Length: 165
Image 1 (cartoon, rainbow, N blue to C red):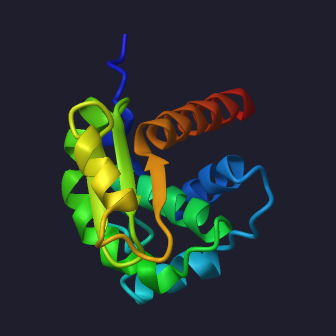
Image 2: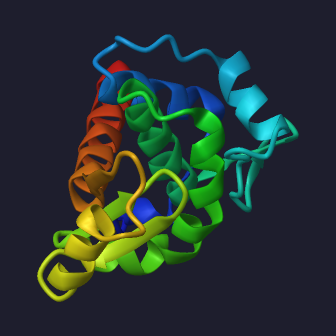
């Protein structure tokens, strides 16, 4: 019996990423391959997988989570250029997040990005949201829920691919 590869270790083609994103946005967002290529060319979320297919680098699991987060934040009205600021911060922390995402919250005051544990960092979260350095708006996002949604979308896509074969 073949060992199951954990999602964080998988790599995805642009077409697979497109399907995952469409599933997570309930088909509301027009996600074309041209948009993914644009985000790659502009270094917003370039594919960082080790494998290639047809001469193109595949997307890593962290890339998929970042793209899903980007589309969620776009839907909430966060300008894409503000998203750029948090990419490297989150990319560096995603492997650790994946191991225990349930209590992690991503916060932004529009200028800075914070990754906090909703239980252990409760006072820090309050400071970010209401303190003197808080921006004109603040966002709090449960990254653990997003990771769980991404995993479900990946499993559903794999299920559909197996049934189509």
